[in-house]
Length: 210
Image 1: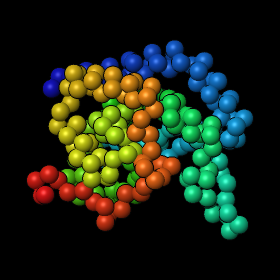
Image 2 (image 1 turned 120 degrees about the vertical axis):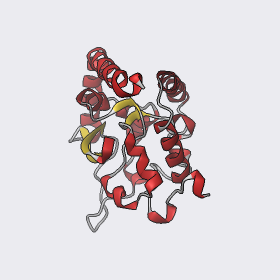
Image 3 (image 1 turned 60 degrees about the vertical axis):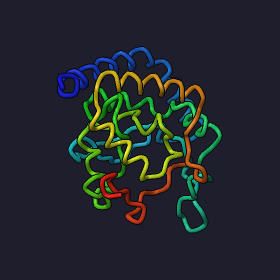
Image 4 (image 1 turned 180 degrees about the horizontal axis):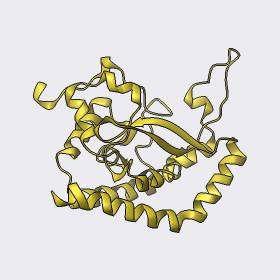
């Protein structure tokens, strides 16, 4: 319990500060590359939901263009995701700016991935439990399939993590994340460039209700 309540947050911020210092040249080079390849803005900012359902500004390197159709509507993700953007996603380099989110205390290195604010009204009570932990750059769902999972599977894994936060669990997730990044596995869902939108019809039930 000491790790979950005190040490986890302190260690997160310490490692985030160290990571930002060491990776600052890489972050600068990536920022320039994104600006040249994809234009401005370099960072993708979006309102996401964090611990205890508090909103925060989520950061990533931009991976898509702003290409639109004749009506001015954005093209589907697959059409806007460039080879360079796909490389950033496959290597998870687009996630590096989230170290700043960790340093600010909005995120953790390990936890359920933060989702869109509009999903809040779509959750079941079981699904809302994912917000009992600070969201993470990586998590239990990410090392067990990531975007190849269904929403039902992801929510069950998220809640499992909430109930099993320990230093050993986090260390194992970090190690498995490094292995998966090197293998570039589980990045996308089977038929989409990104994960499909969570809708009420896809709502996951708790294991007890099944």
